[in-house]
Structure formats: structure tokens, C-alpha cells
Amino acid sequence: MGGLYSNATIYSMITKQQVEHVAKLAMLSLSEEEKELYTKQLSSILAYIDQLNEVKTDGIEPMTQPIPTVNVMREDIVKKQYDRQEMLKNSPHEEYGFFRVPKIGE
Image 1: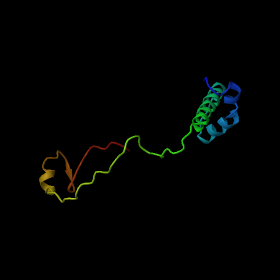
Image 2: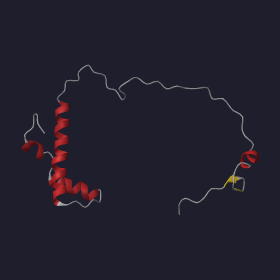
Image 3: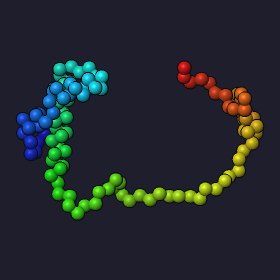
Image 4: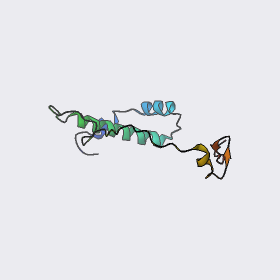
């Protein structure tokens, strides 16, 4: 990672002990190499966030979408309801007035 931070700054933002603690909370088993890798990666992410925090945002409105969105509302209109028995005629299997389908879970 280039930019404003030296490797010493980046790697000291998150400690290996903090990575181990989060891994324990998440019930993850990490090798020593993974702990080192994640320590460096997470520190690098935090360093980038620090860099973003330096951007001047005075006078800029916060937003949740990059483009304006508008809710499109339609009138709630009651439509024709279908007769249950008529619908069940199309079913290969019917039981107690419902469609019967194969079991997909235990």
C-alpha cells in the first residue's frame, strides 16, 4: 500500500491479539499465517478509512443513494379472486384444499 502511511503505522493499527479475539468470537480457527495476514489486511483497511476521513466534506449533503429515488405508489385495487377448487383442478396432487408438493427438508 502506498500513500500516507508507512508499514509500521499500518501494521500497528490492529494487533494480532485483536485478530485472535475477533476470530474467537466468530468461532474461527486461524493459522499463524492467517493471523498475520488478517492483521495486515485489517490495518490496511483502517488506514484507508483514516485517509478518507481527511477528505473535506464541508457543505456536502449526506446521501444514501448515488441517484435520487422516488417511491412509486399504486392504488390498491381489489382484483378478481380465483375459485380454490378451480385452481386445484390444475394440481397433480391436492390435499385438504391445498397444493401438495414433495418434501424438500427434514
